[in-house]
Image (spheres, rainbow, N blue to C red):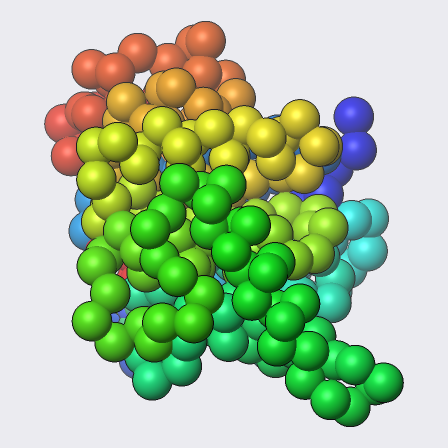
Length: 244
Ligand SMILES: Nc1ncnc2c1ncn2[C@@H]1O[C@H](COP(=O)(O)OP(=O)(O)OP(=O)(O)O)[C@@H](O)[C@H]1O
Ligand SMILES: [Mg+2]
């Protein structure tokens, strides 16, 4: 099995706050890893390190067999990391299509923006996600679910090695949750890996191959889903169970 990500001995502090403490995680090609933990456990910090938003205070990142330093999100994207941020990171004053294509706009003759192509592709991607968002509409005023669909659609413009998703089902309607879970499964079918951060245990149990739990910056569990039970996971998240 090919290992896509190997994080070893990652520490991250923000002043006096130790957000990550000696964190280790390995993710294989085509594997869906669920990452759970209470508020402030360090999940988003970990994602942002892998996405090039933060440098770790110390520790090593091996990506696709090479030791890497992601100095910025561009570096990570170039290596094959696509991200759905918890806050979605959309530009409110731009249209859905412009958000989807942000920083990789389709061009004609190498310099003219190809609005037709961007609108058509955006429409197709939004349709696939069962979203009512329209490519030409500006994001201001859109619902949480529409915004989420735009952030997810962005990850479909490339052939990523891994897609990192921070709470992709938190703000969406009941009907949209299975669509997003199907999308995650389709990534696996194409041999892409997924790191799925979620507070929703049913979603994690449904799609993940492996589940890791963090508490106060440390990993307290990392097992195949078949070896996990929901009560134990809940106990690990709250701290009632120290490790498993
Ligand atoms: N940019 C930052 N500056 C200072 N402290 C930060 C920063 N980002 C995160 N932290 C701190 O690091 C710790 C971990 O935060 P993080 O956002 O990773 O948690 P989380 O597990 O994603 O929580 P949630 O479930 O609420 O999203 C928290 O104590 C948080 O206050
Ligand atoms: Mg978070």
